[in-house]
Amino acid sequence: MVERVAASSYFNRSARLRDLLVYLTDRVLEDDAAEVHEQEVGHQVFGRAADYDTAADNIVRVHASMLRKRLEQYFTAEGAGETAVIEIPKGNYAPVFRERSRPEPAPAISAVVAEPAAAIPPRKDWRLAAALGCASLFAISTAGLAIRGPARPMASTVGPTVRLFWSQILNAGRPTDVVVDDAAVALYQELTGHAISLNEYFDRSYLRSLPAVATAAGLDPQVATSMILRRQSSFADTSFSWKLLQLAEAQNARPNLRFARDYSFRDLKANNAILVGNGRSNPWLQPFEPQLGVRWQFDKAEGVYYPVDAWQGNRTFATGRPGEAHEGYFSVAMVPNLGGTGNVLLVSATGGSATSAAADFLAQERWLHELRGQLPAGKAGEFPPFEALVKAQSRSGAAREVSIVFCRPAGK
Image 1 (cartoon, rainbow, N blue to C red):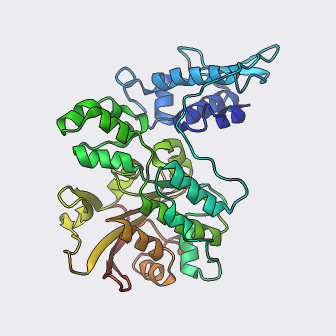
Image 2: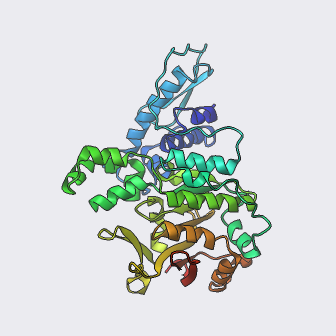
Image 3: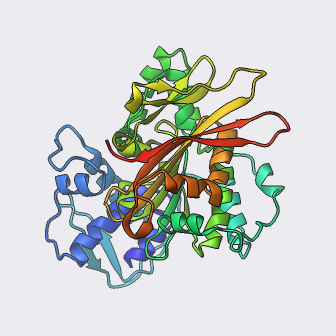
């Protein structure tokens, strides 16, 4: 029954409420817990410190209240035929499963407040469906995807080093999530200069300070609110995901395509993940930044991101001037996930051209073989945790030139 509730329209578009429901019911059904305390939930579900102050942080109470309302809605309408109901008593977060004698009639009309999502057409090629679903869900153009046509078979062209690398990210033993950026939140931070931490992003607490921050930056608060609530991802990230789906086919894998706003700490602890963007556009990269030297800075005057190596005296890598060969950069890193049970691939870039170059780089035997040669031997010949900065240089009409600036083990 829990699976049906979690998959219902009342929960399938709210990762936080779904995670909260699954965690609480697991504690009762699998651990036979009689009590589940607020601090435990805050730590295990919402990523708070184990000893955080629950009096100052009400994230669990707020989401528990929302969970109670959604459960009541589900069992009144969509779940009216269930023989039992799930209730979350106040003061104790351990769910109660209460049997009911007869199904309650569903109302003629039921309203669910949920964020809109695009339907994926049935029985189409799964790669195209996922890519088109991503484009429509995140409110970006699908034109670039439509003109590509069917994906080319890649299984016969993938080299041994490419297979080795991707086997650490895409494997049958663990789900892999492709998490694309939240362009609206990135734009908000660029316009206001106000950084949003992962905790603020996850629990949406940054929305409380939005009117004051927007006003201070000279923005209309209503316009800023409308902008930041949009579900948008960059075209570059969607194009990267398209190429990645082709690579996944060669590995007989089907990763889950996720929007950053719908992701959770629970997922990042348990699954393999591919995080696309930077700490502003995809805050899920932030927990891994202490292990890496590359920091992505935003140049407001030029409207571009550029890499800075904090481990080399804040060395800055600037793009080329107009009229010269354009120099873009992308960084690639692989580190353990938050639970230490899988791997996370992080890909950041200066722009769309560099993001596209990163996708090509990660699919070519030559470049991954060179990358592997600059790293110490890992377990069973695998890639160890690492980070690399790569320069992609091109002129109009000329082939793109790629060179590895540096490659080193992750961690300092």
